[in-house]
Image (cartoon, rainbow, N blue to C red; front, top):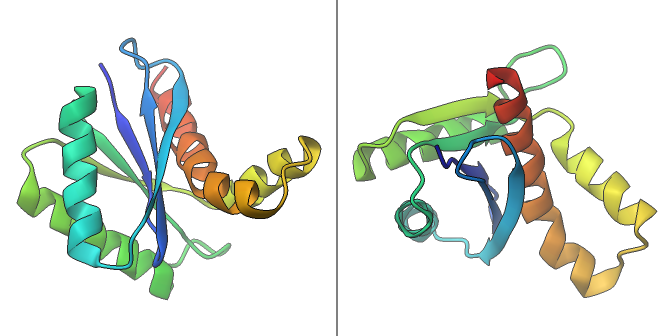
Length: 136
């Protein structure tokens, strides 16, 4: 079962997709858009295009587990997706995924524009892989 992973952001949103066995996440794209509705439409489009049967949205929590402003925006984004599609929408704890993405880019010496373009889709892959690992 293919699953779409989403790292929702104010300016850029990263997308990742699993393989058909639901075992491995791969980066898909970074969508540069500030309009909330356009990002939601893009997520639904990509889910359809990829044949995804579920969408996992990263939910940033504070280290104490509480939801801050960013977490509330991601919850609202998930609610919007529920309005647009019948696919199951899962909110998944994404604490430290962006930190992990930056660490990976440091190790591979990815800098400048390449780094900016890649960080969100890599974070989406981390979110999705964490979710897939929890299921298997």
